[in-house]
Structures are given as structure tokens and as C-alpha cells.
Length: 180
Image (cartoon, rainbow, N blue to C red; front, top):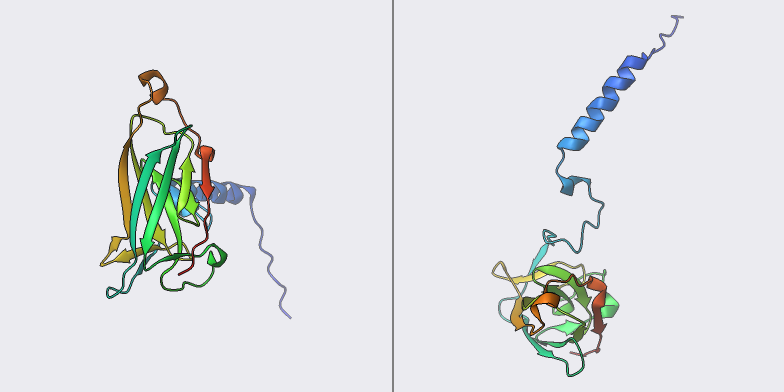
């Protein structure tokens, strides 16, 4: 029998491999280092898309009004679409899912029903938008265009309070179950 050769690892090689691994990690784009869920609240978050049936596409409209006491009340109206909170993260079912709510391009909440309340808006001019999403969070699209609605809301707050930061947790979501 031939004697086995043993691999002798010199300490200097460990240093080389460590430096190489660090360099590769620094060269990767940030999105390649995120976990499987990604960043669900960043402005660059991208979902998969699901093309809907063009013969009966879901439709969405959005209304936002100032609350008499404080904040803003919103309502998402849909056609050919049912909110289905019990089906989130499950297999997609046509015309069922939830919505994503954005303020100035920043996702602030998932909506499992048509009504919501935003406690405060950060500045005088705000773009509030909502998109319809399937159970797996993919964006519903028609001919490649997202099924979404948006409104511009002018917040009449004083200029000195208009620029303060508003945490995302200042949103309350009132889920009203719908059947359809």
C-alpha cells in the first residue's frame, strides 16, 4: 500500500482565502446579500408580477379624506377583486389577494381590507398610492402595467411641522372583510 498524502495547509493560505472572500463580498451588489424576503419597505423593492385575465381584469380606485379629529382616512374600492387575508402567502387564486399602501413611493403597509387610516403625513404634498397584489405578494398587472391607483393629498400642516419624520408605525389598518 502506498502511504497517503496529507494536505498541509499553511497559515498564509488561510489569510489569502479570507481576503479573497472579503473582496468578493464587497463587490457584490447589496441586493445579492439580502435574505430571501428582501427589504419589503425600501423604495427599490421589486415583486414578481402576475398578468391578469384581460377579459375580466381587477380594477382599483382610491379615495383619501382628512379625518375630522386627526390624520387621514382612506378607502380602496375594487372591482373583480376580493381581499383575502386568510389566503396570504398561499397559492394564488385569480381575483383574490391584498393591497400594498405607499406614501410618497415608500411602502408603509399591506391592506387586507378596503379601509385604512394614516395618523399623519410628513409634508404638505403627498402621493398616496395602492397596488393590488396576489396571495404570494406578486404585483397584479394588465399588459405589463401594475393595477394601481394614486391620489395627491395636500396636508395643510404648518411649514415648521411639515418636515418632521413620521414613523411607518403611525399607520393603522382597519380590515373590513369583504366577500366576492
